[in-house]
Length: 216
Image 1: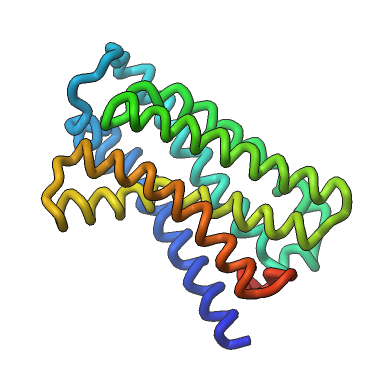
Image 2: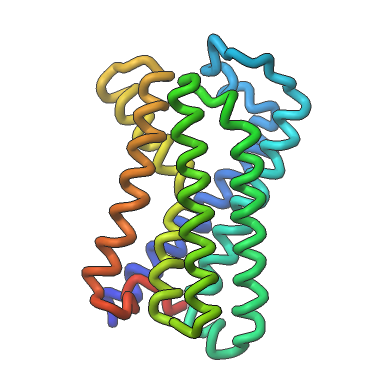
């Protein structure tokens, strides 16, 4: 039980800190995304900056909403107090994921690293949407444990950006690779991790996956 609470607390803390970082960085510290855009060289398509920035703002906003909504729905306390809220919040998560995927689809052709990175983002979007729809499919058939496990897989994709930048930092700063190459490795590496880690957690906790779910 103590280990479970520590893991829940860690996930909650990381999620809140990442949401705060994303909001501060993208809306206050660097609203023009100058630091991020400085790495985009040799683009095949001309970047319409005002449109791109507006799409990015929507992307970041709904990514944060998806993270918050997902975290709330993993809470047993929220579930016990109001199943109706849990259901409505689940649809908020679903719509948020859809909007994140759509905005990501717009930005994919302008991805750092060129076409190979764009392909990875498109694959990532398709995988995330499929997994999220599978979670909805399972709950519609009252398969609660399967629904929860698919939601664990889906929620992991909320941390895509975090994994990409961690891997990029490792290869760029740690191994000295150029930023664009490091970023491309980060995108592909994050896909692998986001597919593997949730299933490891689910298998470690048997068929229920209870310990992987925050009990806040």
